[in-house]
Length: 158
Image (cartoon, rainbow, N blue to C red; front, side, top):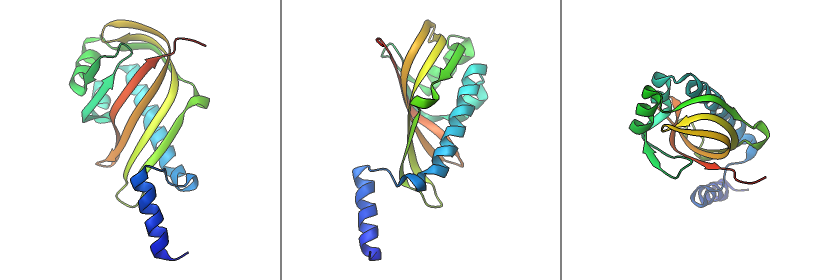
């Protein structure tokens, strides 16, 4: 296949939001999964310094009650103990990570992470217990992965 046609197909896939081939994604998917595990550990420890690195300046969360919180809101909640976890357990077989964008040297990429979580603890001072569908949008910048947005939705039925 001519190089110009390959370039055109790649450009169309990026514009249409089609993820890159799975085998090309694997190293980046593993990087994102490692960042997710470190992030989850930081949440469990209420490690504000680590969370400041994981949440981008423009970060926002839509919590299980449908409230939108900024990075500063979340950090204040963690500092005060209004957000704290007794348990935070992802269901590995439910985890999906998709990579979008230019996977060259600059890592101009976005990762979309979806999973099922079992959570026990508090969000914004409200008790939360149960299973939740979670979506997080991660970007690679300044040499590490950061979340720019996330949302939790309670699982109401089986």
